Each structure stands twice: as C-alpha cells, then as structure tokens.
Image 1: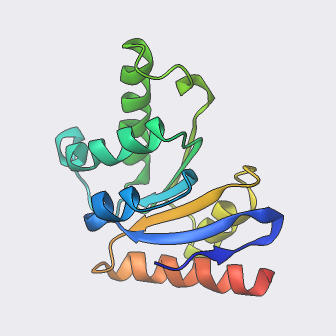
Image 2: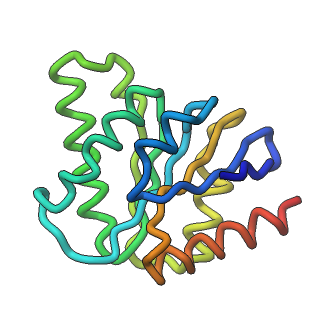
Length: 152
C-alpha cells in the first residue's frame, strides 16, 4: 500500500475493493474522497456487498464519493440511499455534507481529472477502491496515476 503525495497536500492511495476490510483498518488517515466503479449492471441487491464499505467510509468522515463506469449512476443512487438511511436513523449527523457524483460517459482521463482536481477537499486522503481483476479498473487506475505523476 503506497501513498502518493499530490499537490494541495493531499495523498492518493489505491485499495482493492475486494480486500477493503483489512486494508482500511490498517490506515492511519481517513479517506476524504473515494473513487468507486460500476462496470456491470446490478440492482440494489447487487450493491449490498459494498454497503459495509460505504457505511464505514461515511463513519470515518468521507465527504466525496466519485462513481465511475458504465453503471455508475446506479452506484451513485445506491450510495445516496445509504447516506439518506444513515441520516434518517441519526447514525451520522454529517451526512448532509456528503457529495456524490457519477461519471458514466466520461473517459478514464476525464474521471481521473475530476477525481484529482475537482473534488475540492484539501489536506485529504484520496482513495480509489478498485478491483485489480477488472480491466476497466486497471485502466482507470493507470489514468489516475498518470495524471498524478504529471501533476508533480
């Protein structure tokens, strides 16, 4: 797990979406901005497997969820529902401050640019929770790393 320093005193980190429990618990900083992807169609029940991740990130103070991929709008809607449920149950009083976006037609480079430059959370940890087994996620990760390197 390597942290990559960015301009504006942010750090970038990538974690495997399928191994998040161990990796997230060993982190010293809390993610402020998160990149998640959805490349295959699935209903709300299909997203249930990432509900514990989304809930944990909100509890840790995540302020921005950037959803990428062909079916990212559905992922975005699911995350919004989790935020709403947590807010209504008074589980987290900061839910109204959380922003979610989806990027279903953007190129990898456009998503990378948005994730790194448009989320406006300074002094934050930016974390990409991507599936290393997914060709689309590996492409997206390369685009983010390439842009981060060119920013240095």
